[in-house]
Every structure is written in structure tokens, then in C-alpha cells.
Length: 338
Image 1 (cartoon, rainbow, N blue to C red):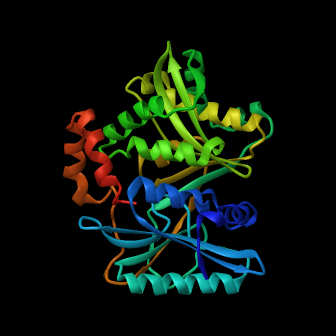
Image 2: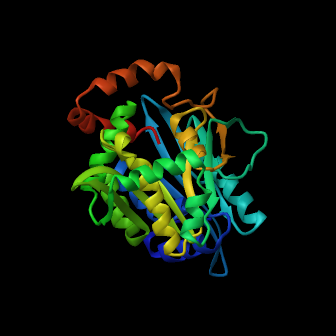
């Protein structure tokens, strides 16, 4: 059992690119992002035999007075857990994580799995993901969108919206921060997005939608193998009337299709939310996510999400806060949520 060091980043990522169980969120760069953007301690565990990695488990610890003490694979990421090519490597990594969680005296150990690992652990069924294969033909992808949603995409096209790729995060952050503020949730820091763009480089893309030179919406997407993953996005106040978000996701799909990508990963949503309905309107079917918890000091599974009734007053107050102030305070809160 070893802990990832910078000199092993290359072979770690080579394993990630070839292991069927691995995702973009298993990449070594997340170690740098989580440590540098949030200051959390990480343990990126791996098993190597005869010079080849057999399994990996990226873990990060969050210790917060407000939100508890956790060890997760992986906070700030949709997917995580163990990625391995053998049952023995999977078992050894699992045992190592459980031992580490006990040593750290965390409230709980969390795996964010695409597939179940521990049937006897408590789970959280709140989240689903939306993934769908794209046709190689752009027009077939347009026709595959249900009629009402397709009309919204064409509405954005008819408004003569323009798309472009940015190399800096400024215009993206403008649209993103305005959007999460309307939802009443804390914003990530500018530094976080700058790190994502710097560390993942050409695999991290910023698509910005404008009307007459003014930002309407923007999305930060990740590219992994044959997949495109729109991960952070949002729109300004003008986006709703202009169908800016509808146009944006179609434009991302169109561009990715033309570049040869074949899976559109719309990402995680909470069941019963507007985001969930929006993705279903595109013809995507929800797929369960298996977030599993081994409870240590905690007695129950954590519920740190906006649907928890105890956060209702906080959300209402946050929505009334001036955007500039929210953007200053938000990063200090969200860094502890994971």
C-alpha cells in the first residue's frame, strides 16, 4: 500500500485512463486541487505490483465544526470510491480506508460509487446521475431531444446567441456566481476554478454564451476518454428569457460530438429538484448513485444539502444578501461541505 507522490502522478493517471472503474474524478490532479483550493489533507492510496498499479482510492479528510469530520472518496466530486483491476486490490484498499477512518476518528467514511460495494452500509438515495450516448451525427442528437426541449434549444438559436471558448475563468465566474446566488447556495472561490483550469488544462473547457457581447451563461466542462462532463454552470438574469442555458448545453453537445466524444454526462442532481427535471426534459434517464457510509463517530448519515429543512432560513437569507458579499463569504462555507 502506497500514498501518491508527485513522481507517481503519471502512472496513476495512466491507470485511470485504462481502468474501466475509474472516472475523471479519480485523476491525480484532484489531490492538488483539494489541497491547494481548500487546505484539506488527502490520502491518495494505491497498490502497485511488479511496477504496475492494480488499484487506487483517492481520499480526502474534512474536519469542520459546522459540518462534521469526514473521510470521503471524494469530496467536491460526483463519483469516487475504489477503482481496481482485481478483487484482492479492491479488498486491501477498502480495508486500508476503514483503518484510516478509525485512526482519524472521523464521523464517517464515504464512498461515492457508481456501483454498490457494501450492501450492508447505510446509503443515501438522494442523488442520481444522467448519462447518455451521443450519436455520431449532430442532427440526430438534435432530433433525439424531446420536442418541447428541442423548441427551447431552437429558441436560443433564434435569439442569435453566440458561443466561444475562454482561457480564463472571469466570464464563467460571472454567470456561475449569479446563478448559485439565486439558488441561495454558497459559491466556490475564484481560486478553485482557476486551479481546475490550470491543473486539468486542455481537459477543462470554459464555454461562454453571449448576446451582443454580454455574458448570458457559461459552463465549465471536463473531458475524459470519450466523455464530456458539464460540471459547473449557470446563467445571468438574461438567460431565462433568451433560453441561454438550453442553447449552452446543446452547443456543448454539438461541439463535443463534432470532436468525436460519444458520452454526454449531465452529472449529478438531487431527486425532485429543478435540475433533475431539466435533465429529464432532454431525454436523459436518471441512474442511481450509490453513496455508501461506514459510520464511526456519527450515528446517522449526514444530510448537508439544500433540501434539508433546517437550511431553509439560511437559503432565504443568502438569496437576499448582496452578490458581492455572498461571493466573499461563500468560499469559507462551501470548502467545508464537500
